[in-house]
Structures are given as C-alpha cells and as structure tokens.
Image (cartoon, rainbow, N blue to C red; front, side, top):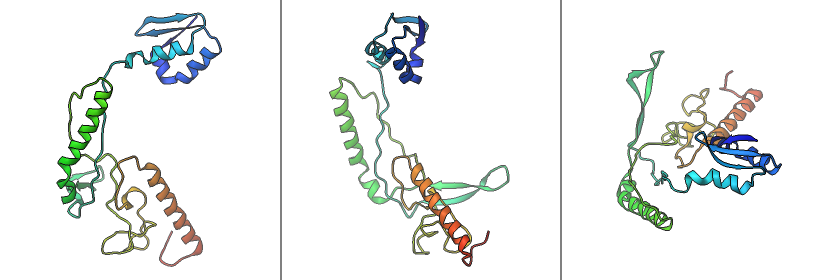
Length: 209
C-alpha cells in the first residue's frame, strides 16, 4: 500500500485522483500521522480528507476601489537613490484625485457591508479591516495619445519628441485596471514590435536600426 500526504494532494491532486480511479491502494497521511487508509480508496473520501483542514479557518479577502488618474501625481528621477551604475532611480508620487477622496468613506462603508453579509451567510466574523493605498499593478508614466502636450508617445509607443525612441508595454497606459495587466502589456509590446519591424522593412525615414 502506497502512502501520500495531504501536501501531495494539494500540489498534485489531479494525479492522485487518477491513481484512485485506477484502484490503487493508498494511505493518506497528515503531519506524519495516518488519517485514512483503504484497499480501494474512494475518490470522495480522498477529496473530503483534502478539504478537512479548511472546514474552519481564516481568509484574507481584498476589495479594490476605483481611483482616477490625478494630474498632481508625479513620476520623476530621485538623485538621492541610485542603482549600481549610478543612474537615479524612479520616484513615484501618487496622489488621489478630488473625486476619489470625496467618495472614499462611502466606498469603504459599501465594501465593509458586502463583507459583513458574506460573513453572516457563512457563520463567520470579520476579525479586522485595514485600508491600503499601495499600487498592486502600476502602469503609466509615459502615457500614449495623439496630443504631444498631454501624452508622451503615440499608440505604438513612439515618442512625440524623438522619432527613433519607443516606449512599450505598461508605461504607455493612460489608466490601469485593478486586475493583472500582464497580457495587455504583452499585447501592446508585440503590437509595437511588429510596427517597428514593418517600419524598418519599408525603410521609413526617421527610424534607424
């Protein structure tokens, strides 16, 4: 009879259940102690054992509020902080716009009320509520646009004031969503790369290899 651990169930539960379906004899252990043993383990039993530690526990639940871009935010170079080559590092100063500040208390109250209903429906309690002003998925700083007075580059990332300079990916976004933007950044980068390649192949003026 082979032994598997609860950790194995977590890391490769699909493979374990396949073994169970084939009728393999398994013993499930937790922290070195036998928790279940059977000649032909029932998949339902194995899954129930896997879920047992989570029947009562705690979870961190996070919510995001909409934040509009503020013209008062700044992305500059900090001469007091440098990398190994002596280059100044970026300095981000994010400021909330007036509308975001104005609806802050109302937004927080709404989010807490939703969590309270979730807790009540699952016989749970809210242990604590904290606020954060950090950026999970930063983007922008070289926003794309058609107006050189309000943007840094065009939709392909080509800067308005230097035709042989491209900025690609996350920096070109005028705004950013609350969820992971990786695929969007990759798509924008591939679009810019294709545009650069096409421009070079046509021998367009102003763009040098």
